[in-house]
Image (cartoon, rainbow, N blue to C red; front, side, top):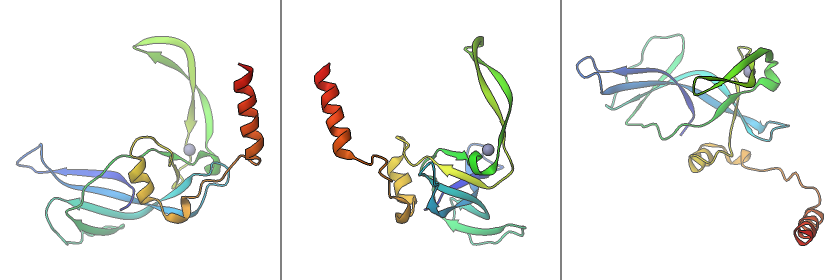
Length: 164
Ligand SMILES: [Zn+2]
């Protein structure tokens, strides 16, 4: 099981509704969690995998290393964000936000992403959490405890509840 980015979807010429192959560009996990976000980091590799409905082991000429696999399926989508922190991506301006084709008073930043292969996996996504946990290496499952004094936090929470 792995995480990949869909590069190409090939359909049958005779049946435009039937997918024949899906080409994925694979991600690899880095060895450690991101030091400040405490999330798994992924690097986009040059390995491509073709998912096929039929068993096939033909190699295609390409500058990329290509693997053929048989009878695989795409299980789910995952949330991956570009690692802007370490890549040095910058905000280049503001863009107005529309809601139902009406201009709002809000705006959002426009980010100019640097072309780096570094990404961060949202390992705490509610959707597909089980699959995300399965694909993530065991060494990256540790969740750093950010509360240094648990008893103090619990006592404060109890006191705040009693004060209400
Ligand atoms: Zn970025």
